[in-house]
Length: 244
Ligand code: HEC
Ligand code: HEC
Image 1 (cartoon, rainbow, N blue to C red):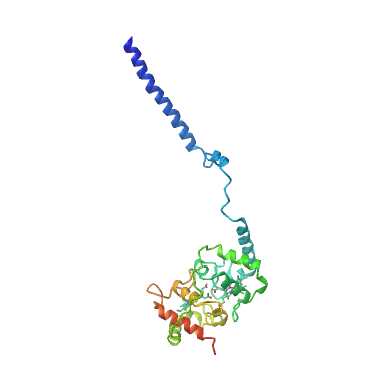
Image 2: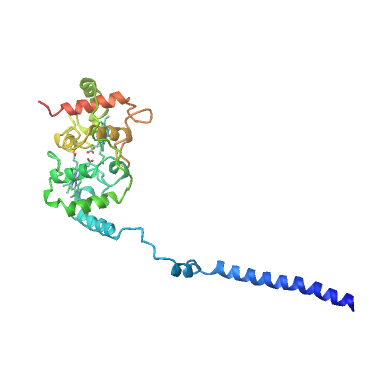
């Protein structure tokens, strides 16, 4: 009798453990297999409402800017701002947006680029222009890396010679741009040089512009393999073009 009682307890205890662990396992499994989102529902109800990370105003501004861009700019700069050779440059890409400040973009729109088809649009200044800039920037959120206060020194004569060798075929022999029948923009025109800082020009030569014929020009990776000083000479040369 004694032996029988003992073995009954010996069986009961492990059996209870087994039933408990099966119950625990079932509970866990049902939580894990419920559709995503629902298992945290109770938690969400308990915690305080979290701020929505996206600014609704900013989204509205981007959408408004897109509509304005489609109306006023896309006939030349194309529907996504990707540009078209001989018509208008690409202005909604990482390379351009990391070099062009808001001021650069706004000045270009308000003043236009004399001697090109980029006509001045002073009527767009204010909220409309802000919205257009927001739309352009929505393609790339990184910082503007150009230091507009930098002034580069160099030899204009050397720069002129290198410009003819490495740049003229695409930008025109005096940097006239599209009207000379070339694929590059008018980087020798006063209307460009007045808004573009030395470092803007330098960084464009250094990085190129993705999706366009403008490739990296400086260093061993560059198509022209220019030294830093050669690049600076070219900038100094460009600055002499409109001085009489
Ligand atoms: C009729 C054609 C045309 C229209 C419309 C037009 N652009 Fe342009 N845009 C150009 C051309 C051409 C250039 C380049 C001129 C040059 O420097 O050779 C240019 C240059 C620019 C640049 C400077 C890009 C760079 O590489 O430096 C910006 C920014 C710009 N346009 C913005 C705009 C915006 C914003 C609108 C609409 C409000 C607009 N453009 C409408 C033809 C146009
Ligand atoms: C193979 C053709 C090609 C060569 C060579 C070339 N470029 Fe360009 N460059 C372009 C094109 C095309 C653009 C405009 C890109 C676009 O459509 O957005 C451009 C744009 C630029 C810009 C920006 C202009 C703006 O309006 O913002 C600068 C600055 C520039 N080039 C400087 C140079 C210099 C300096 C050289 C010579 C060392 C040079 N490029 C050689 C094709 C060329």
